[in-house]
Length: 394
Image (cartoon, rainbow, N blue to C red):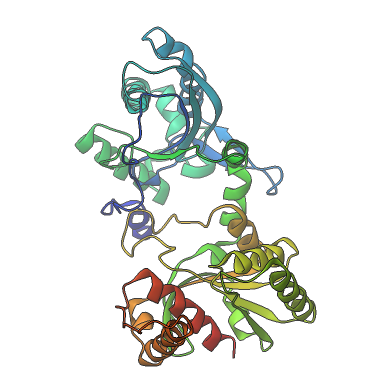
C-alpha cells in the first residue's frame, strides 16, 4: 500500500496558487471564499456517501461534526472580540473546508486572524479529543463512523488505510497542525464582480456532487504530462478520444469582429458541430469565448488550448487539481479536452514561423514596422495558441 502513502506525502508548495491581493484592505468590508485543506489531503472529517452525484453527501465523523459546529459559531465567537462577521455558506468535506464569510464592519485586525484562529482551534480540538485512543479517536480513525474510508484497526492488523493513519500521525507529531503546509495559510477568493456571490455559494453547496463525479470518472480528471499531438507536446486533461475524431473545425475571431460577424460565425460553427465536427479554439477574444460557451452549453464537444492553465508539475496541487465551473461539468460529461502547450510547443520552429508571419501581416496592415517578440511574451503566446489550434484541427 505504499502507493497510497505516496499520494499523501508532502510536496513543495506552488506559490502561484495561493496568494494575497496586493493593495487589498483585509480589515475592510468584503466577502471572502476561503478553502482550508488538511495536510496530505487525509480524510480527517468524514467520508463521501451517496449512490449518485445527485444524492452525494459527506457523512461527517465526530471530529468533522465538531469542525462544522465551530464554523457555524464562528461569527458569534468573534463578535465578542470586536469582529462583525456573517457566515454565508460553509461545507466540511472529507479532507478540506469551504467558508464564505462577509465582513460587515471594519475589523480590528485582518480577516486572516480569524482564519488562522479557526485553524488553530481545530488543531487544538483534534489534539485534545481525537488524536489519542478512546471512543472519539476510533470514530475518526477507523471506528464505526470512519470504517467506510479507513477500514478500521480491528484485530491489530495494519491495513493500507491504517498505514495512512500512522503516516498522518507522524506528520502531525512533527508539525503540530492538521492543516496543509502553506506559507499563505489558506486559499482565498475575494468577491469583486456582480453575480460572483451566487457562484461562490453554489460552488460550496455543490462540492459533494462534484467530488462524486470526479471519483467516478477519474480518467476524465487526470492530468497527463507530455501529451504528443500533431508533433507538439501538451499537458492535458479531459476526454482524449476527442483527438481521434476525424471531423474538426477551428474557431478564431478577431477582437475587432462585429457582433454580426460573431453571430454569423457562431451559426456556421453550430451547424458543423451538429453534423459531428469537434471544435478547436483558444477562446481568447470575446467572439471566441462566446462561441466556446455556446458550444459548451449546448453539449457539443470542444478542445480548448490554454496558456498557463494547470498547476506546475510536482506542485502540491497537481494531484488534486480539477477544472473549475463550467469546464468541470463539461469534463464530467466527456465533452471537453483541455490542452496547455509545453515550452517545447511554443518554441516549435513551424509554430514560431507561423506566429512571425501573422504578427508581420498585422503590423503591415497597420502600417507599422514589424519587430520580433520573444516566445515568452503574452502576445506571442496568444497568437501561438491559435496557430496550434489551426494545426491540430487540420
